Length: 182
Image (cartoon, rainbow, N blue to C red; front, side, top):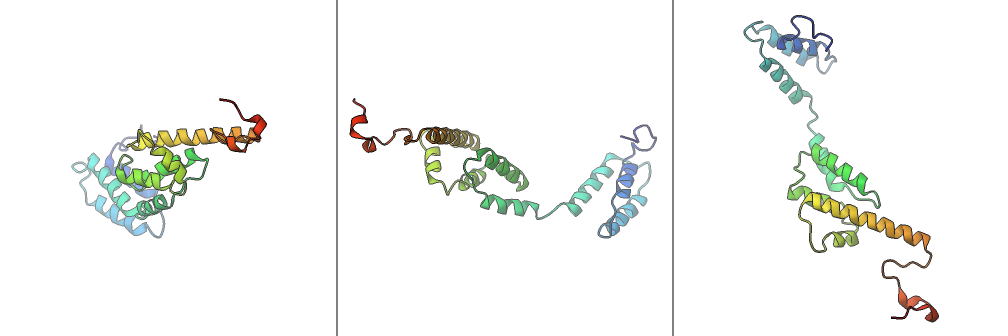
């Protein structure tokens, strides 16, 4: 942006040269020199096309992209576990890792990984798979959010009501005089 009015800085060759001047360090110096040597062999008018910048960007990504990032994200996805009640945190972390692992969120593999994070909570999974059974990631996500929010509400009510036993209560443990009549 600083060089918008400067003649020559619309030139893809000049843009690559400018970018290369900013890349410094012992581990990158040889790569920068090789890129500059390749640029010197280009004709300054005939070869000064947008493909020059695209080639530079492609070479830069190939050289400096973290090649293990995808693999690490896949490993983290396999170990990711839901910790009640943080459903929003679990979903956010899952989505980030899915993108880093280069998975399609709608794929069956991604859905299986999403559900695997809940495998320590069988009760929660059983509730997810009550009819109508959700088949897409979005439907499962919505159902899980609703279930966890309901569980939080029930737990909140239970904390505020000492004798509260859940949705149905436990009528057999109430003193005889207090049992409701039907």
